[in-house]
Image (cartoon, rainbow, N blue to C red):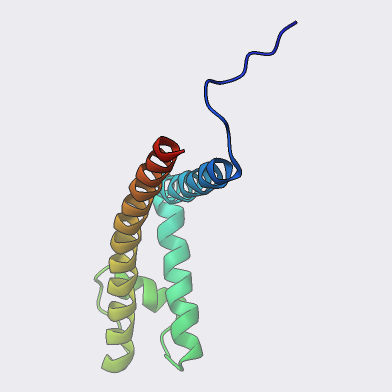
Length: 120
């Protein structure tokens, strides 16, 4: 049985670029999978905000943090309530920036791979 080789030579550079592209695809798939479970993601985000702020001596309970994020009134120091709102908004902005960056990096890797393949 004869082996059918591709009409081009596969180089280490090509393999490294293909690996990087697959890593980027995996990262993109991870972020996409988070969107499949929005309630789990939301609960995890609330717990993360609560934990991060508790370390900084925020006195709100997990229940209160969730209430603030849901737009409900809570009894507590205004500073603590504002910290929760700020943290939640920061997480929302990070998600948007991460998605845009991932899309750009992915496209750049593909173009780079194709260009280098063309140059070899």
